[in-house]
Length: 120
Image (cartoon, rainbow, N blue to C red; front, side):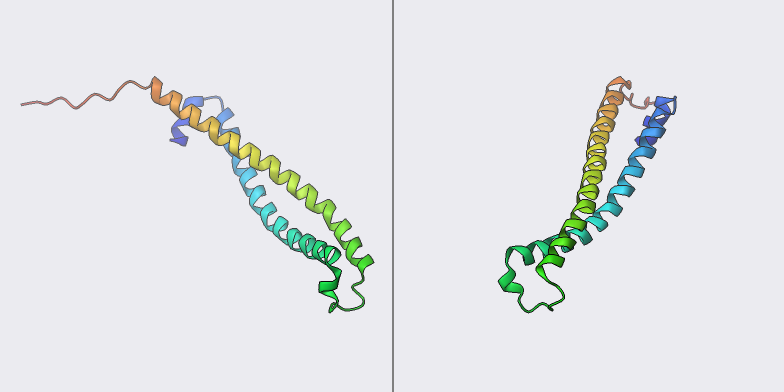
């Protein structure tokens, strides 16, 4: 159905939209993996800062100051990755709605299929 949509567009705009959708999906997929790694670090350091008595078994070189510093440094990258994921996810969501609307318009414009003639 998407190929037929592409041929109906004729001006290459649909091809650009499909390429942008594919690029957004690929970027979004990689960012999810990066996000998960950063999430583990952020949740771990956040838990250590929130409940320091639970983590007294940690080595002495992992002091509260170092944990706070690591949390602050990672939070910048975490926010950037989350923002780009939100942008790509929003684009993919609205692109899908746009394609569905285009497909519905094409279905309404096509003449109904005629049954094959019955010859004796």
